Image (tube, rainbow, N blue to C red; front, side, top):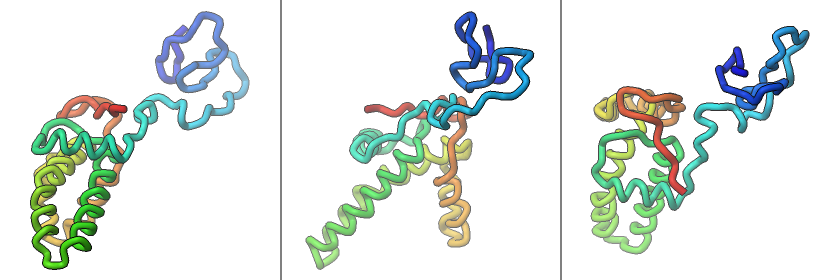
Length: 162
């Protein structure tokens, strides 16, 4: 029996949809209590990427500007770049090591941001508005926004490994 609300195919005789929790009884007087958000279909089915997985993925896709990246992937990797840059500054007070580290991590950071923008349905070229300074506000907003549920012009939603 298909759910009229979400279209999920349920077992015969089921009283509630296994995907969205809607009543499958067309004569039900009141709607059922909604299930917890974690069982909702869509983006919640993609588990959050861990810190280590995000670093591995972004470094493996060092200069890959194609595809999509989840919010967790981008922000964990961004945190990693900040921590490594900060740590290299502590280790080497002259500034040479932090410069080399930041240069080495520049390309994967830009690539991860492009993939993150792709997840929100935007081109990676939108990163250029950061040079206008005021453009940092919408850019950060887009990088922090939820991605598209389904496929968009940049492909299917990013799969979480691990």
